[in-house]
Image (cartoon, rainbow, N blue to C red):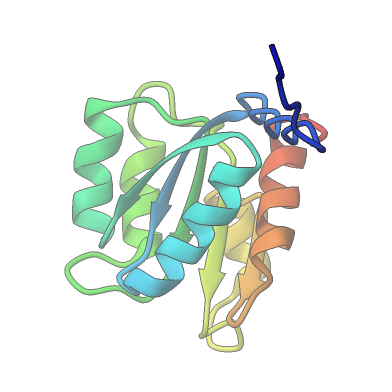
Length: 143
């Protein structure tokens, strides 16, 4: 009996990332939300996307999230309006929030960070990997 063996063994499958936490991405820019989702998912986050603050508020009342990543300027309800309402909900008073904004110079960021307990602010454009690192740090996780 003549058997042929493969010259190379198949490459081992890449290990699945360890679960880090559940993240809600709130952004009306679908492409930006998807890029952020891709980076977070690769790092081990379970992610959901909401296209504006109103939808995000519905999501946080139906599900719990470990970290929130939100744009500021969106239709129907801004990121800051969403955060004010979210902070009043049970279980969300201390949830880490990362704010993404193209209007950083127009906002009183130090006051907003203190009043809404915002963990970090990223001006647009931003590095998705920096957002992932910050989300992990906010949760006390090293990836």
